[in-house]
Length: 244
Length: 244
DNA sequence: GCAAAAGTGTTCTCGTTACACCCATGT
DNA sequence: ACATGGGTGTAACGAGAACACTTTTGC
Image (cartoon, each protein chain N blue to C red):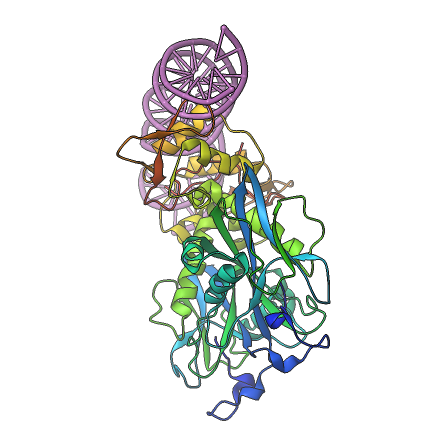
């Protein structure tokens, strides 16, 4: 139940002091692809505890705001992206972290979110962070609080969802090539995929991608120009695209 | 970050009144199999709001307790099971629900958990609930608060995890037959599976189940006695066991 | 004997894999 | 010319689906 009635008896008019108060925050694991590598957005802490350490961006949930709303707001604030751009990023709830001593100052329960976007710009230190930067995933040292565990959970979740959902398109711009889409899988999974087979698999899954009608082509550097696609309407992959 | 430093400036010694206080609760979607049907544990509310309506069991997270700890404690209290029995139930975090008005009385953020167990006994109204009962999943009317959404999310999550994890064994007693295991899939998915193919699939997945050495056999009613198995060490299914 | 559930075998089909090969572009 | 990446073709393999059939129990 929600706000259960303690010990089965209390006055019908609720007393707000009868429950233990918590601070509720959101933490963001924001991923993007830069130069074919998976990057994470991290900020450097300006205050104790963990002063000078890297941490995930995040912030308090406001009194009249849902956790998801707070996550989207912080996403815009701390990445320095326009509200419009941040509104397009894929955002999904990861898990909630609530160990009593995860923050030495006070009791904080944090709802972690994962955000994905294509080639996001360098963050401008918009929020309270002393420094904000994209770091290649795996190169970051130990993070503040329990953020190492959160980040590892986020990466695991993304890798798993690539298998059985269309999540990969969230890493791509509105129009993309199959090579870019394959690059998402390769960067997140850290493996190489067979190009012809990947192509067939994607095209044979109804609704995964949708060919852009006017068949203009484009080059990623050199090589044959590639056909362009847009994300399809599907959300799940049946059958899944399993990791090698 | 965790407990971020608001607007980048405040005294180093933290003021606990500087953050908006929330109540944090856990809600439990507890599933079991009774007579080959999926059942959910529901309680009838004794107080307003939603007095007399069915709701998910749950309760407050205590000041020095993690959400997972609170979930396990409430599981034991509200199901009337012994602490030892409740400790064996599979418990995993589902998601966190935080819409500002989900509880009309106050601001409550609830971390929802899913619990699974084999043929659990009839609940004894151990906690604060006016009534607690197993209801066949799908037969319950509208629940209090946002519990319909939580329950639907829990069912969807379980159905999905059956595909690519060994979760089904959590619905079975320590030793079980392949017929019982198949019954889990059929009850949760609401479909019939081909017995021979199911058997081959399960036995060919290393670590899913483990034959009980002394080959005693047992009957589920009438029919040929079935071989017994125990849950294996594996946690993931590669390749997955996809829904028809 | 009959119903019911366990267990074995077989065939067909479809998806995946591992290649070889051609195409179009930049340097 | 050659390197690079896009795109097509194909044969072999393996997992899953569908279904027939035998075995062992209770009634």
